[in-house]
Length: 469
Image (cartoon, rainbow, N blue to C red; front, top):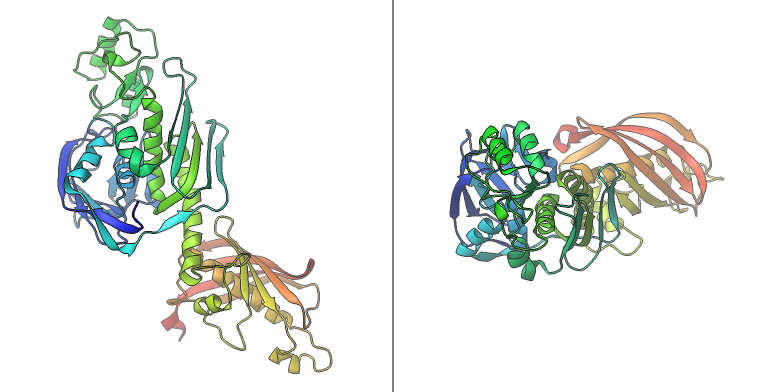
């Protein structure tokens, strides 16, 4: 797959009804500039607002993934997103004149065929990729769901489903080469539900656009043909159907023996597109669904944001180091003699923690007067070193050091528990406890070796640079 970003070779449209809303929609795929990502545009709303397909914009996960930006809402985006990922598209505008993409046959195949008709164009911009370096695990005991991403040089996905239902049984499937396998082996896999779920889904206001041509219905209850026709009539489904003997309504023929498992994998690819970047990892999933996919995507997106923050200032960090002195100079407004951090060794966005190092030398200018015959590093500068370390952590949460300053406004529970002298290495471990309305609350401790020398709770305001100057 290309290392450059890609978009479509032209515009193309399709029309149809949405699976869950039943809305009649015309959807148009359009080429987009590099770094646009996947952006849904509601052309039927005033101003044609758009919704970027990232997990931060997910607002609902009832049998499908819904994203929104203010009043602009788009239902059931996962099949379209899976097609974009599977076909190697990075940037696209997806215009809709209603609130849900046409469902087609319930798979991603109609969208793949749209892309094939206009072709794919490579763009003059490098493709970003999230490289997983350590296992990422998600577990939901209640649902019996487990998802793990393991380091791998390619994007691979393995899915196992087990509904404890004899009509479906246990199934598993795996995608090992996205470029070769997606189009023929997974894009055609259709959505499915159990017969006993149909009434419940209708009562929940879902599958308003569902019919016997855009979904597989698995017969999982004892019911006569007469009872089936009565149920369909009550649900407003005018089509005739037969129970048949295959275990599928109307004796439908599966496109794959394990088509339900393949569709679950398709859904997962679409949901994980909401991470906002390409993923290089081996993903293993047991009993996944939209709720678990989205929670896992949130975890992985945090890792992506962390890596993105690091790469912006330190493109090639050395082992055991996140930011060196040169990177810190790009991130911090402080200069000699008031830059109090030499290196960052840990930077964990998910845990909201950072570890910084300050090497104490006899050349520190404050030792000339503090104290001439007994040099002790001032406690107030230890606190400043802790504060500056916390400043760097905020870069992972949208604080652009080129546009903003972090001004400290308060200190609580400050305690100095040991002396710091020339030759010591001061290690600051800071945590972001709260960040809201441009006010950050941090806490942390400073060590020399294993000895705690200071601790503090700090408060800061994030302000525009020009306001301060």
